[in-house]
Structure formats: C-alpha cells, structure tokens
Image (cartoon, rainbow, N blue to C red; front, side, top):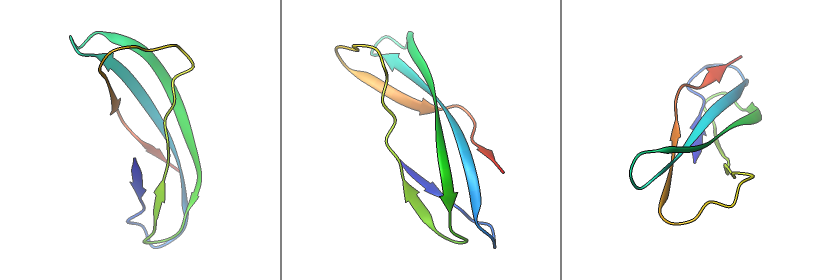
Length: 67
C-alpha cells in the first residue's frame, strides 16, 4: 500500500491493519510503522500477517495515525 504525506514537512505514520476473510470475518490485526515519509512524498509499505491465512483475504486500514 502507499502512504502519501500531504504535509509540508516529513512525518511518521502508524497504520492499524485489519485482515478479513471473504465473508468479512476479522482474522488478524497488525500495526505497521512507517518511519518517515518526506514532505509531499509517498512511501510504499507491505503489511504481513504473522498467521497462516488461507483463501481470499483483504487488508483494511482502519485509521492512520500521523506524527
């Protein structure tokens, strides 16, 4: 996924990620820290579950925290 910093200075982000199965059931939750995104820049990050997820799984960012 891409994290876009629309601010005029570099920012860090924490992204809570919810993994859901094809029925919409919650199967895992993780947190991804993005160390720094330059002002006006974009960072590409990968969210990985530490569980063995099978079938069709989707990832959803519930709410990003910028600091």
